[in-house]
Amino acid sequence: MLDVHPPHRKIDGVKEFLLHILTITVGLFIALSLEGLVESVHHRHLVHQAEAAMRREVADNARDLSQIRTQIDKELKMLDDDRAVLAKIANASAEGQHLSFNMEMGALKDAAWRTAQTSGAFTYMAYEDAQDFSTVYAMQDQFRGAQEQVIKDDMDAAATVESVPDAGQWTPERMATAIDRLAVAKMRLTYLKMLVVAMDRTYRALDKE
Image (cartoon, rainbow, N blue to C red; front, side):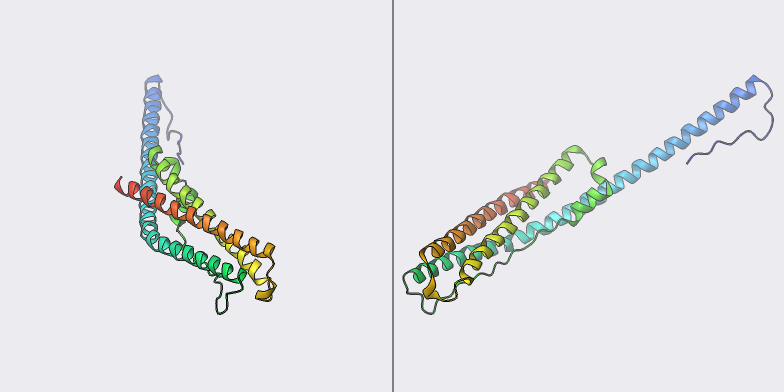
């Protein structure tokens, strides 16, 4: 906050008055310039911190993608095995077989992204940089939504199976429902794997900038 103080003595003459006005004007100009400089430095520091934090976060997520892809391949095989067991149940040849519904999904971090939004760093970030980070984290949101849907589809299939008290009580309709739900879950997982490949390319492109 800037303070302008009145003169300490009586001003004599127009010349002295103009000199006093000039002094005040110069002082205000210097003060405003310094204030603007301090704010500019603060904004640059804020942007630098936000970019550094997000790049570290993206690098961590990029390393986690390999494990997530392995998990997805494991889940795809599990769904194929479950469909094979259901086929055996339908043919009354599933003795000793069992179904597995155990989805494990790795999570991608976004704390630095949320902090950058809350702190207002994006307001002062270069448009191209803000757009690049927005693209990366938008893909992560899309991935998270697909993960949640896969888990829901898998749980729906599991609920269909669990609602049958005995293997001999499967009806063709219930069997078809379970198989359809597993098929949908597999399609979601396949889409999830495609997203992982796309995110890997996006992470690599951001890392080269």
